[in-house]
Image (cartoon, rainbow, N blue to C red; front, side, top):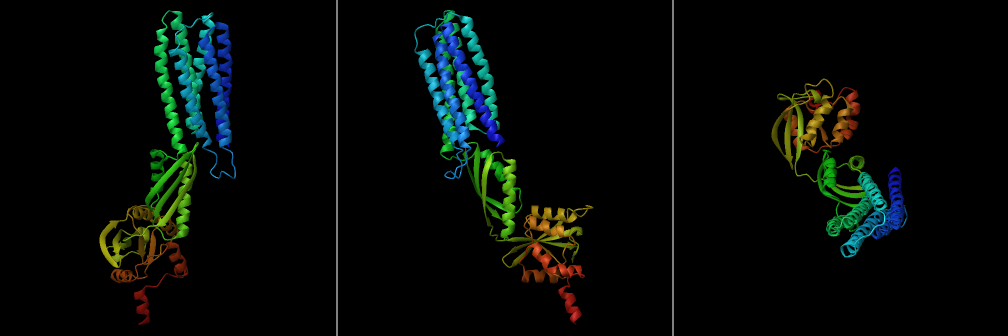
Length: 425
């Protein structure tokens, strides 16, 4: 609501400024006998009407109606479009009144005319810069368009000043050359506003920089395997984004949780996102990477304290040894397990195969967060462990494994297959 109030307040300032300038120039033109100054005052009346339309547009665009579930945000862009044509018309007026006028300007009182013109130039210059800056901060196309319109009033006042002084000193052609240059600037400003308004009204894509920024945020989550498509459109000050991603988890609950987290971060870090919808689908992987904590030639039962991890690649039912990696968290005093999980996520590990569960449940949550599955095989011999893994390679969500074996852990651990066989013999 503060955003809307700020826009409305600045638009009201523009209305008051144009009202003041209209009265000033018409009155000064009447006193000084300057027809061009009086005409410029009439032009300011047109500016007054345009600024009123901007104010009304901002009020209407933020109204919530049942018939318009996506809001009336585009009213701002419609107002921008109208302002663009008003700028074109202003340029035409200036060109017609000065370039095609043969009669020299005659003034009765030069100080009154010049004083009014200087007040107009200074006030419109300062206000157009202020309104432009605020329009960019508030991402308001109608305020930006109005700032350009206010600038045309400043330019037309410069033309009037050049015309008055040129004719006063006997050089009427100076006025015509200056007008030609300024009219080109006016039409250029109008063209830029027209193009931007049409882009939004025709649902052109959001700028590439914004889309790349959103893509970067999404891919910062290791569980997101790919961004398949990302599109967006603007509506007034706001943006509507739609994304399709591949996600490395079969857990619907986990996928929903991560997607909502990503949406919240994007809305927090990227300004003026009205709505973002992320569609996700599990990524069908043709291969999986397994990590097994080891100590030399033996299995290691202490997850975060193991020296190395044996890395395997599974394709179908076949396993291939990729090698070993050092445990980057081994030398840490605290947080070893969490650090190791993050390192495994960075290396694209899909499953951690262990013979005993970690003592802390924090590791389980960390594995779940990064979408890494778990396979628990209660076997102490490495070769037998690998044989059992090849027979039943499917991983499970870490929390499901923990919940299933929590009682065994508290009562003294899960008995290995070889240990059970020895006991039975």
